[in-house]
Length: 562
Image 1 (cartoon, helix red, strand yellow):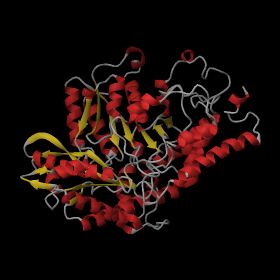
Image 2 (cartoon, rainbow, N blue to C red; image 1 turned 120 degrees about the horizontal axis):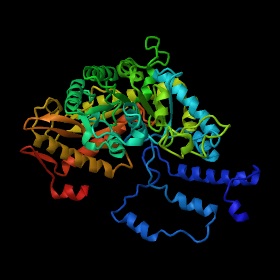
Image 3 (cartoon, rainbow, N blue to C red; image 1 turned 30 degrees about the vertical axis):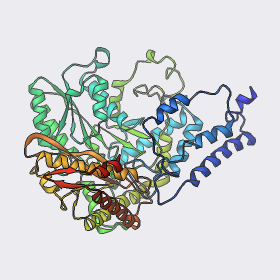
Image 4 (cartoon, one colour; image 1 turned 90 degrees about the vertical axis):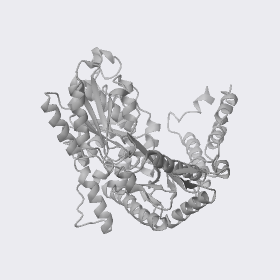
């Protein structure tokens, strides 16, 4: 039994046991550091995995009969590290952050304490951190911290799903007992995150009752289209219960006008005598920019450049209305720079959460005691990680001004990148040019000039757009093969546009530059543009060309890409 006890942290805090754990942690960090190279985006050499790679693992993996010892365990774990993506200066793929030191030590404390955050008797540290973080972020978002409440959850998906549960309960308080009616409808823009699609499926509403709303040229929800579709639903006997307004879409960083969405929604529900619709701000991506809501740009104490100030003020125009939403969220594991998964769900009226709470006798061993006063039976999770500790650590470590500097740098880097990109290429367009923020979407055209304005105005034929999409898709593949050098992101559906020859809107494919590392500064952009230029020139050399509006790649290109 002594050997088994040695696999645990000590009971008495003795130095020998502590040194074993610290030694393993030190070796792990040293090994990871040995693979780092600022000019690459992976820890060591990138590994390319064949289609049968994981099947081979399945065949070979067998649990050992005897434990192999802590040093050997660490060695086996470290074999997982080589080739793993690392958020260096050239990591531009998506909102996968470089976890900060405050976030890491907060997460480490969470793991060591290992409390269940559903009840403060089992997890007092997490409960206290959660209350502090909820209060801090409520105040920053503009909620009345005396009325609002919230909790940490499993990501933006968890927040969207919790918001939908709450929306249903507000309309039909007995839905928990009786099930949901079959005429409920949800609304989100056509560029909203797919988490709502999962949520309507999981709640039983069904994906056919998720209504997608058109976007405007700035990739924000078209309120007129929302109005028309809400009226259409109501006239057909449906009940709108949930609107997801995105505050920073994943690809374009489009920010919906929550104030106008609220006005439109209330106008329609009042007209037809229905209850107000619950509006959830999916601010998982962009919510942190609300930290500029009270920044004095005239004094500008952090010394931001004039063009950066203009862009930050443009973001603030929308973010200052975040508090209008009935609920919202912050993914700290995105722009908050904490480890996965650390997300916060906030509700404007915290009392509403009691609509989701379980009865006391349904949780006989959680919260029904004379001791303990923090019982979160309203969460979907029964076992709940205290990820609020990492969030709390990050808020303390960065402070508001630290986050402001980081977020402003992302804007600055993107402004400079866009200029350098357009100066270097005549056949590229920035397809989210009306959206300042940490993301730049761009699209190449095979005929030597940008066609984006024609596409955006609905003047291009469907086949033309599909051909350009294919040309960009082949660029995706080539960029992906070299992602260990510069790791760009991409998407096959950045937005939808009207086309000449069909009433159906056509998806637009584009490459993504997402600034998520603090080490991605304007000084490294020339090297990134040079890398991109080499890939584009190489692709053209291998035979990507436009012929009668269609893209034909020769056999050499196909062989290279595949």
